[in-house]
Length: 384
Image (tube, rainbow, N blue to C red; front, side):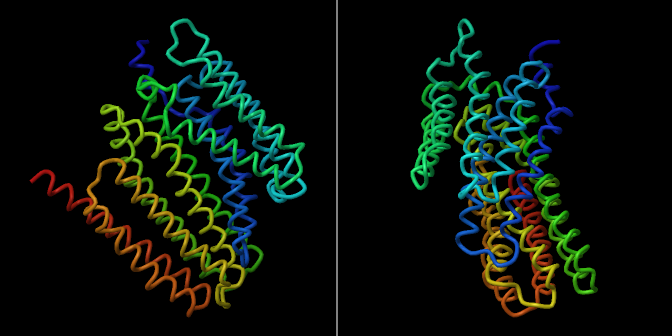
């Protein structure tokens, strides 16, 4: 089989899906801390602990995209990474407290596994990847995370910040990377893997809603659960009816035009905002189903409204990075801002929880229609 044919046939396989199972636990454990009435501390804890887990997953995903998942070496690395991710998930409830050392060791182990694969790539004869790149991007952060396990807080968290900043900055400045690396990426595989990860996070919304209904089996809880299911279904419809096709076309354009920053942003950074928005929405839905006849507590209101806004803000930023015009994006993102602040937030303040979730379902449906009309109009203008 030629190299071009191999690239064309590079799809996510069953082993990668098995690897993703650990993220079902990670998302569930971290989102559980946002149930009820979360405050700034709970939201901050979620973001601080979820970003390293997301960063580990997306780096592994890109690594598998480049190396392929069929080799025994790559599969061994994926299998070895699962206990590290599982340790991070198990430590998450006290990830900034008594279990911070365990969370740090899990993060260190995963980065060490990155290093094993990329070191081999850098040492290949004629490789354009300099040897220092995997050492600085993988090995040094692994050592920093490992050392932080033995350092008492708050200095431990300073080291975490240094490690993450080093990786993010290296990716931003592109030092030691070549355009050829981005040419190696298989777009179809990237879209599949990120899409399947979104399925996992949306599944957390369904799981949270049904679990809350099982514990609070009343008529109003059932109504809130139905509205919550509609919210999750409508978000999934937006992602998989328009989002994946748009992402595939946008990434192909970016790859052919060597727009490496657009690829980096839409694969590594912006999906984190998208995933975080869905996760906090899931927590708000669980709270609403548990107490449907009460007003949502302040933290749950922020989770519901902020989650919707984060979801659409990430989509707007991705659309802009893929070359959509500002006017096209504003046709649906502008109403999103106005309706979220002017309709959903007042509804969450005035209505009982089931009514607030029902309003969210209606808003998401309306925004989906606006997005579709905007895209159809933009397509008509482009072909006129």
